[in-house]
Image (cartoon, rainbow, N blue to C red; front, side):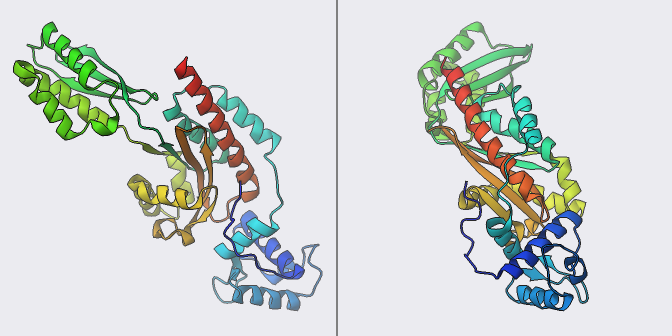
Length: 351
């Protein structure tokens, strides 16, 4: 996966590279601005404090560092982080511990394709300690495979709708006392002829109205059931977006209000989906995202594409000083695992 492929290829001197790398790694570890005094103690930097200060000033002028306030050290900008990710960060592999954790956790995943990304997102959130966003996109046109009515009580039924690709939705429907077996049979006949095997996109409000209008003398009795079917089908979306580890969002946010703003942004869906589609696999620094809600955060995303039917993204949402070296290999590995799990689930459904 090509992380940060859009970063301009800038040629920094070896000394500037060493100083920038040391500042970023110290900032990730300690979370504080880094000064020349600390850098002069780093073994790989063999120059005077005055030279280090000059180099830091030049890196600041070039946009790689910023000084939060007078007399403080420097912290990396998103441009500095991007250069680090592409040019300076060691190309690590997933650790044996993280790999074993993921493999063991995924052995218990037996979900339908639609639910796999969110289930894996919870595992990744538990492993990293950060919230995780998952997005699943269904490329193919789903059709209605099954519609079932299950009695819950004397006055209510559970309506269950299942698509050909395994997506499931249900709804509780209140019924009148005069819902006879003959009416239920009439409902099943209409479902079999007018709803099953039909693409979801065709089951519109206008189509529903025509089905009810053609139900004849049973139209009034059938209306609550048929309306519930179409309402349930309308809830089956071609794109699902889930947030795992929501309480952890409050840990990384500056305050509760900031966390609520991020949750509201995720609930809007379109901004997050558009960022995923724009970046694919990569690091999205919140300050570059165009959304103030993410200004202090970082998204590390990886894409998956298991088949012609399913593709999507999984992303860790963390602070600016997140451990890139550990999380990037882990999220790449887990994206490949999602591909395998969805492919296996599709085969099981076919069987």
